Image (cartoon, rainbow, N blue to C red):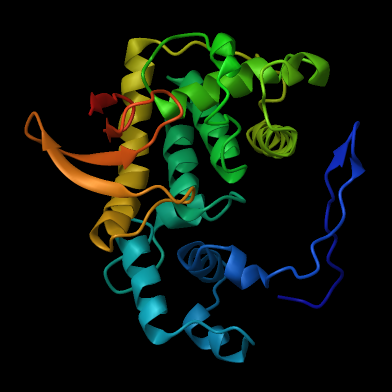
Length: 276
C-alpha cells in the first residue's frame, strides 16, 4: 500500500538466453483472483470495496459480491464479510485463496502428518506455475513414483523427481522449462516459510495421508470448481468442466486430462474414472 519500486524477474534459458518482455503487461489487479485480493486487503485491515474506487481498472459491485461469496464458501470470510481465523492464516501465503486454505489446513496437521504439508506445498507450487506436465508428448510418465490415476498427484510426483535432476536430464522428458522454474522457485519459497528447507525432495504418501490430502483438497477447491461449473466456465487451462453424478456423489467431469486420453474424466479429485 506504499509507493515503491517494482522488480520483474525474467526467465533465462541456457539455449535461448533472457526472454524479452511482452509489449504490454496487464495490471496486477487483472492477473490476480479478485477473491484473493479481497482476502489480502481484509487481512491488512483494508476494505477492497472502498479502495477499489481509486483503481484505474476497478471491479464492479457484482464482481466484488461474487468474490466475497467465494471467500465465504471457503470459510475464509464469515457471513457478514468479516475475515475468519482460517482466512487470516490463508492470507499469509503468496498463493491464491483456495491454495492458502489448503496450506493453512495442512499446517494444522503438521505435527502428526508432515508429509501432507509437503505434498500441499508441491500442489501449490504446481498450480501457481499453471502446471509443469505437458499434455503431449508423454515421456514424463517415467518420472512418476506411482500409477495413481490423478492429474494432481502426477504433477506432484513429477515436480519432486524434477527437483533432483539436471536440466539436461529433464529435456529428455519434455518438461517445460519456464513452468518448472516457477514451480521450483515457489516450492523453495514455501518450504522456507515453514522451515522445511532440509525436508527430502521426494516423499511417498501413505494411503491415510493421501486420503487426508484429498479431503483438504476437496474442501479447498470444490466450492471454487462448482462455481465454475454452475457458470459454465472452464478452469485456468481453458478446459470445460461438467457436473455429473456417480456412486451417489456429485463429481466433476473434465474434458481432457494429462493422465489419460479419455474424452471425459470424472474427478473427485484424486480418484479419477474414465468416461468415454
